[in-house]
Image (cartoon, one colour):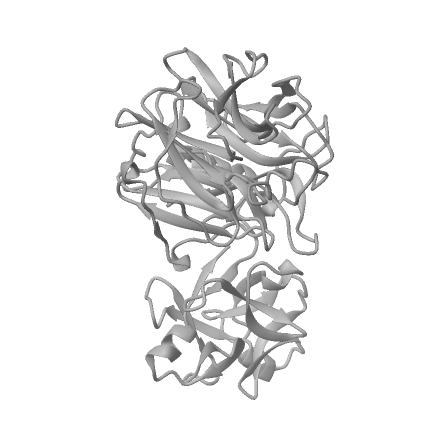
Length: 461
């Protein structure tokens, strides 16, 4: 977000703020419980792209089996959109309630109209995230300030859900507020949950981890943690080493599939929301190690997300209901911030994000010259395919000739630098592989370790 009168929730603390991801700690009975074997994850988010072609302020969903690499659902289109208030949302969060159903919370804000002040948050109920019912807005306070980045968790001691969010207090800086509710229809009077005396925003919780509750938040442009053995307002004390990658906001704690490690996600507010992730084996240590970007891939254009564990059946049901994408993206192995795209009808790898983002979407179809191979059809220019010409890769119209078909066909193999990734051998020049060189794509013989890395790609979404 960008600054408004009290600055934006995405650019507030130094100038910024934001939130991805709900923690495993907000699952009904107990936060911080280990993820059960065979389960998966769902991410809620909205979308923005550099020039707006991929921007949508509705609820988007993606799924993952490892909490790191994500498959957008519904072709990365919204599954539901607000019909009240600002008619848009930011910062969505999914809570699994104690009865096993879900509630979706989100900021009542369309785009970047920071002058719009809403004391409400959007609320949907859902039995399975395939249908959404009971839409309404929940009023949280009567103050002349916002209610940004709502999240919730079960407070067992109070027998109620705690709904936390960011707002400006009487001293003029952002704090984390809390209201308590049993039904997300009515709520108790607001209280200040966390106010260390400086601007904080985007609170994310992990509750009951070895008897300790953790609150991560944005301080200046850094993600920082506080902790308490209770859930009482005012009881949390900052303790962790801050992490950031540029201006970072929207902290999200996620229990790793192995049940021992934790991931901390953060969202940069420029340029247009790049997610970064850190890992720790000991949440109590407050220290984090940055993950290699090869390990994770965010949904295209995703911003300020929330992550919630699912069962395998729920994962399968969501894919059945909303569908897998009809396209893929290809990430570079040794430049994992870059993706294969076409620009001026030439193939290259460029740093995410960019517009038109559809230039990086590909349909991997049976090879034009040999159906056992693969050809790359452009989503944005569906009559055009990647093909080599004088060993350089171009995006050309299929002219129907055998020569074009052969130039546009590749054999997919295990990745030359990492067998879990992919490499692509030219069909009619089988001694050469698709690779990047000075960010441009071409086909070359592969002889060195650097060549092997240049010729290795992750096929994802």
